[in-house]
Length: 329
Image 1: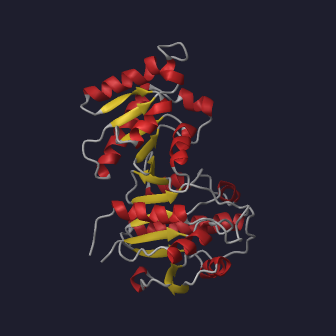
Image 2: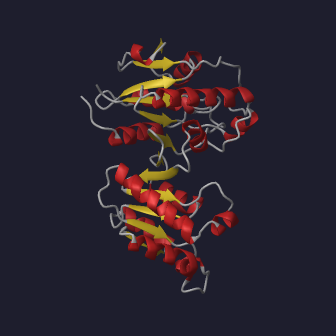
Image 3: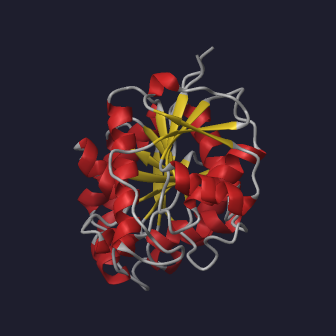
């Protein structure tokens, strides 16, 4: 039986439901996987009508009731009751429903009833309004699975990028570049690559300052923190190179010189991947008890409910998930 991928609905006030129905109606996944949406039938039906997609809504009570057919979207509703919300608007209702769809999906994954999660976008402001204090999907998944410090990996084309830090101010991100933090993150990155079936991975570590500081002329982090980390990692037998100038290392990895790059802060790696292909940049959360991939864009409240959102990233996130799952007959 083909692997089963679970898709929590995402923020109902955003474009999540729309890109789900568009993805499932425009790309045939039947040769690689089965798909289940955890969400609300009425909301998915509204997205179906908005996008003029020819899918039939099939509400099921349990995973065992799944009926995988090309023109059917199987929906399992969470226990939390549907609430009223306005498309394109921050609200307690939207944040709460999005959270409960994630929570129910995680329960299925932890019970081994589904093989992977593929997540549409959620809205941090709506989550916060609903009393959810985690900053986003990764933090929610970490708490629900009791996972310590999951690692984010971006993948686009042949480029893979890990992040030493993400949701920190730039000033705080610079302070976070310490020898110990670089060592620990690089070790996790290499183990993650191995888990994704990359043999003998070669990891590059980006520099923080222009030209890697030019021997201290433009900053000392490379000399004081990053180089000692690289030497210690190499002494442990790991294939690590760096620090390498950030204006060239991502291009080199894209062209096959390295298996992945460790970016030292949020925008350094985000800009590099999204300039390769904005819509096909996919986020993978490493270290969870199950595989999770995600679109790498927001809820797009400004176009929600208009049926014009692109489903390219959603399609790509499902394809990436299936590429890492064991092939099943």
